[in-house]
Each structure stands twice: as C-alpha cells, then as structure tokens.
Image (cartoon, rainbow, N blue to C red):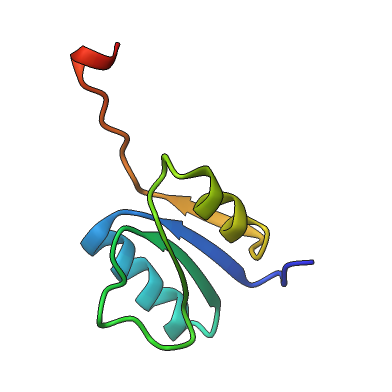
Length: 81
C-alpha cells in the first residue's frame, strides 16, 4: 500500500525534474518515470526508465504512489494514424 505522501512524476524533462525537487524539499517521496535518469536526482528518488507509452514502467511505478503528475506528451505521427 503506498504511503499518503508519495508521488509519481511521469516525464516532463526539466519541468518534471523541478517537481521532483520541490516534492523532496517538502519531505515527500518521489517516484519517476523518465527516459533517462537526471543526474541531479537525489538517490532517494526511485526512477523507472521508460516513458508514458511504456505500460510496464508506468504500471510498476504507479503501484508505489498515492498521487501523480503526468507531464509527458505522447507524439503520434500521421503515418501511424
């Protein structure tokens, strides 16, 4: 069962990184799904490598949190529509 002060941040690059930093400053727990782990993340941040289109990464990460911030964008080309 996730704790009440745990948050998932999915994507967002620089913005997502700032949200992680703000949560940590408030003493909250942060879990992130990013393509690449930013080197500036505190070691207490659990990072799942992946993106919004990766159901395994998002599915594992969401089980550990009580709330989430979705900042990622999904790009769809005309060729796949």
